[in-house]
Image (cartoon, rainbow, N blue to C red):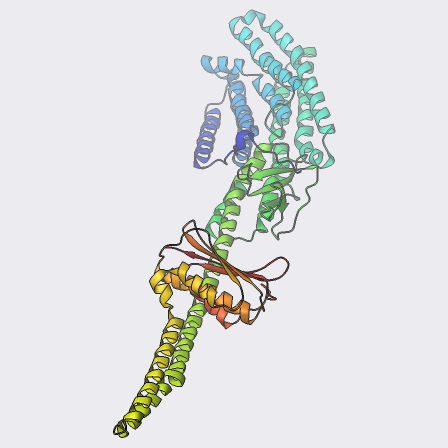
Length: 583
């Protein structure tokens, strides 16, 4: 079974919105103002050139941090970049003419290096993994700040504090280089190529900075400090550029791209296959695919299909992130778990994809519902036409029966009465002819009663459905067993008449077409419905094409909101089942 990965409790982080944009704009304005202050009031010792270099360094970290934060709102790399920019600005104030700024600059002079270590060890997820990495970063922050506090409070101990800081700091830099190199070496080939520009340059920058620190302590010649500052600034400034290279060509994709595309998907119909391209673009994973949960009968909850409905086999080396509720996902995002180490990006991408998939599923369901309504409307129109044709045919049959039977006999009775009137002088003739006419009238009355009985049986009108079907069964020439599960009582007239004609049609078909030897009629009331089952042992087949009588019967039942169906009986025969709502 395919295993879905996901956030605890099914929570999926949401992409940053207008609040994040406002925060980024505010930070950008603040850092720009700090850079302008640096340029407007250059320190007397560094001059305008040094201030320009410092301002450029702060600016490049600020721009890179804002860009990284906007693309990956849930990743800490962008925020670490911005903190580094702020620390760089603060550290350059140690040469300022204002005492307060000089103290701030002294306290933070080594803080950018600690942040650089933090950046390298946390890249690309923004989180430190492993106790060693956390310990190294903790030591780096302590070494960068604690000795500077001693320098501010005890200026006489400056030399000792800086020597201790240099020794421990260089050791920390070396450990960081080893950790970064080991981490990159353990990565698969593709993510190693994508992360190498940033991590490789970062390790080189650490090595150069460590070398400059050692040179300053071993050979502190005049002007060496200024040269070291320039070298360190250049190496620090190259790090954001290396990051931008990885941002453009690596796996540090932009989650906001899918969020923006999903907004367009919500506003207009998009082919489901386009979601694959959007996900691949946002994740920086060309093989990323959006899968749909299979709703086929008997399908496992973790089985997925592609946009064309074809089952997808998920390789074990790839990850699946649920889209929607983890217990009943709408789909899943298939991605390379080795390429994308930061799961927050996958979560950010999956959220707007879920909205798009829900819309696509709703569109499909609405189209299906519209098609079903159209089919139902066409069936209703066809049913009404059949009912009208059946009613017209019934009227024609009644008219033909009256014309061929009762009407002709009434004419004959009239002729007999006229003949009797002409022979009124012969008493014996009158008596015999009157008796014959009376017999004809009685026969005519029976014929009219039979005709009325065929239209609506008097037993049904007077005593209800149960009595009427019992009488009907007695008239059939083969054995018919009637079973009434519970007393029916009197039902709605339309229900009684329709139920009667259902049973009459089934009995007629069993006798005339199925050559049945026996029939069982079961009638019951259940859950507000009249249930009818007529079973025979004849040769009829439930799959046979229904004739006009069966179609007319189906129309009549469905007009009342009921159902009728033919089913085969094991061993031979057919069962007609019908249900009619009582209300």
